[in-house]
Image (cartoon, rainbow, N blue to C red; front, side, top):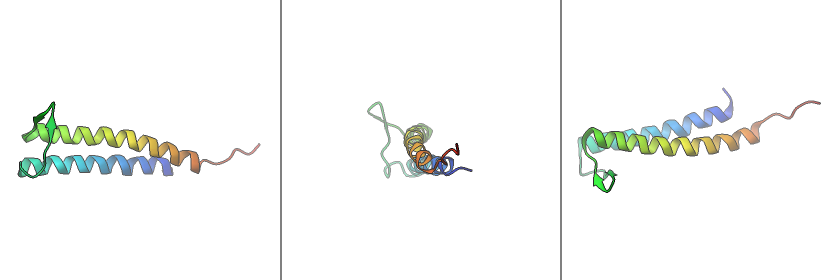
Length: 80
């Protein structure tokens, strides 16, 4: 697996885990984590979905940016 792909998987997976963890914490103890959707508090499974989706999109964006930078710096030069 290339370093860029590995970097993307780490960043994207980490962000998904943060979102899922935040949603589960909100599901177990609703007052602990605040999740809002359209300026309304999201509770229950809606909170889990909103948190996971939000962090997943952030992980996708930042993962692609960082993976692109890693790919630029780790590419091999072509032999003429």
